Length: 96
Image (cartoon, rainbow, N blue to C red; front, side, top):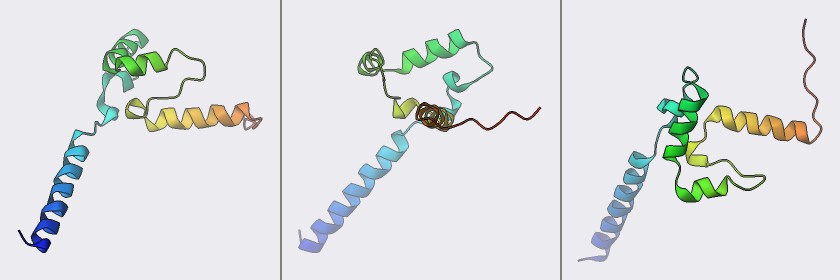
């Protein structure tokens, strides 16, 4: 096989691997644990069943980090807001 043929094969293989990774990525927005209409018990049960043993163990420590593959953008925003409040940021005044 020529040098250019090897390069083309390598590029093609990398492209296929990339597309497989993209196809395997999960869209968390449609999972039951993200559905606010379900009870907290149903949502928690669904989320725990999706977690690996390693992810469950990581949540047992203080200051446990979120699990990126299960996290929604709403959770990210809440975590950032609570972090900012912990650093002394002020809440906006309530409008009556």
